[in-house]
Image (tube, rainbow, N blue to C red):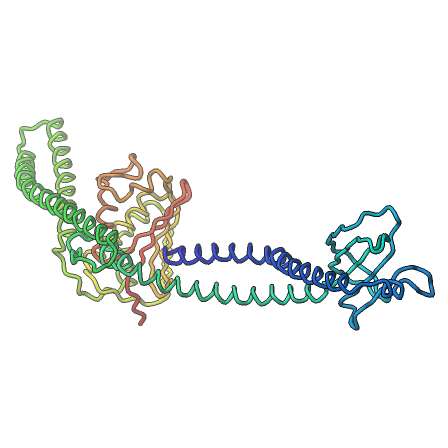
Length: 443
C-alpha cells in the first residue's frame, strides 16, 4: 500500500474515532445543557407560583371532593404539570430538589424532569411539584444526533478527499524520485542525475544523497566490468598458447600412457578455464551494453529449436518435455542472448532433474504482460540456496559439474532486456523459472 493512501486512511480513522467519541458523548452533553435549561425554567415557575400564592388559593386548591388534599394541574398535551400537596406537620421546609422519573398522568406514563419544593405557608407544610415532560427532549436529542452524524460523515468524506489530494501533491517529488531514480537503481549507466524539484527539504536531501550514492556505485560498477573484461582478455592468450603446446605434446610418440592422461586432463582443465573466461567476458559485454537489441524473436520457434538441440541430453535422462505455448509472442531483443538465456534455463532443468522426470514449458498473459515458465521435477532448492542462485560461481548442487555462471549469465541477459525472472522452488519436488516480459505484443 502506498504511503499517500496509508496517511489518508490514518487521518480518516483518527477523525472517525473522534466523531465516534463525540457521537457517544452527545446525549450526555445534550442532557446536561437541556436539564440546566429546564431546571432554570422550573425555578422561575416555582418563584412565580410562590409569589402569587395566598390563603384563598390554597383553600381553593385543597378543597376537593375526594378529600385528597392534593391539587394537580396539567397542560393540554401533558407536557407539564403542577401539583400541590399538604405534608405532615414535622416535614422540613425550604427544601428544593430536582429529579427525573416517570409519572402516570391520565393513564399515560411519561418521563418528567421534576422540581420538588417543600415549604411552609401560614405554619402549614406543603410540597410543590412542577414537572416538564422529557419526551420531546428525547426526540430532539435523537434528531440532533442523527443530524450531527450526517454532518460529521460528510465532513469525514470531504476531509479524506482533501487529504488524499494534498498528500498526493506533497508526495509528488517522492513519487518522481521512485519512478525516475529508485526504479533504475539496477541500471547505473542510465541513471538520471537531474535534481528533483521540491519544496520539501527532506526530499531534496534524499535526492542529493541518492545521486551521490549512485555516482559511487556507477564508478565501482564500471571499474569492476573493466577489470573483468581486461583480465579475461589477458587470460585468453596464455590459455590458447598452453592449449596449443599441450596438443603438440600429445603428438609426441615417446610419451607413455600415464603422461598422455596427464596432458589430456590438463587440456580438459584449460577448456574449462577458457569457458569460464568466455562466460565472464559475455557477462561483462552484456552489462556494458555492447549488444544491440533490435531483432524480432519468436519464442515458440526458438524453444522448439532448443529442444531439438538438447535432444541427446533429454533422452539420456529419459525426460518427458511438455511444450504448451498458447499465444504467439514476438519479442524485440537480441536473438543470440535470448537463445543463451533459454539455453541456460533448459540445461539447468535437465541437469538438476531426476531420471524419467519431466520438464513443462508454458506461457500466457498476466495483466497484459507475457510470461514464459520452465518447470522441472528435479531436486529443487531450499530458501537458503534460492536467494543466491544468481550469484556468480554458485552451484545449486555441488555434485554436478559446471562453473556456476549459467544463471548469472541468464540474470544479466534478463536485466539487459528488462525481463523479470521469478523463481519458485520446493526441495525434492522441482523448480520453476518464470520470465515476465516488459511488453506484451499479441499477434
